[in-house]
Image 1 (cartoon, helix red, strand yellow):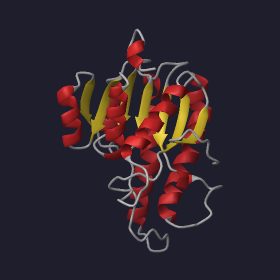
Image 2 (tube, rainbow, N blue to C red):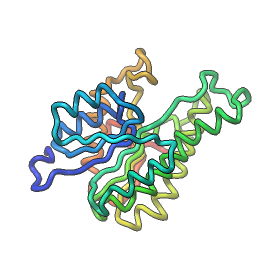
Image 3 (cartoon, helix red, strand yellow):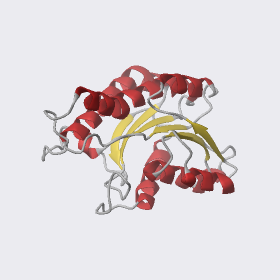
Image 4 (cartoon, one colour):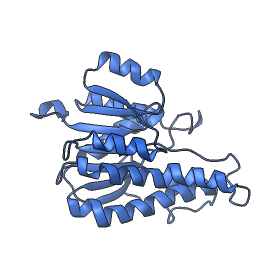
Length: 236
């Protein structure tokens, strides 16, 4: 049921919401009655349009690569005030996707944005989630599954998402779950976005409808799951 049926609206913080899946998630959560704070690295026309018609949306600036900005954002959050923190920033990396061709700078940038920065952000924001209720969610990818990698292509992106899954597993076991916070590693599907391209079979609307259903069903569950937008549990 929509959160509007609750006495107190649910509250979400969406990291990396300027476009694509992040923007779609903001829109869907608002439709479901949530109060949403959404971050953008630079002004987003899509977020501005939503904010113009939705009083429950607050926009703030965040560069996921900036530890200082992450710290400032975390300091503004009241302890236990959020039901959801969702981190969805990410990049594909170099077009060639070959380890032997990648420069050290390319590799460092890819792994920092896709794996290290989300973990730093999650650690900074963990206390903002309500114990026993809150969920820390990461946009991961089926391509980050070692068990399901039967093609071996797009190796740099795969490795960065596998690193995210591994790092967030440690975060879940040692920090989130003992604090009563659930953790989700979410595969949104192959989605028609700037990254996914026009050949992708899943629309943003289809993806975010499923993702929000998974998130709402996970509230109050202190466990970690790697799951896709249709609710299928994926092998690590």
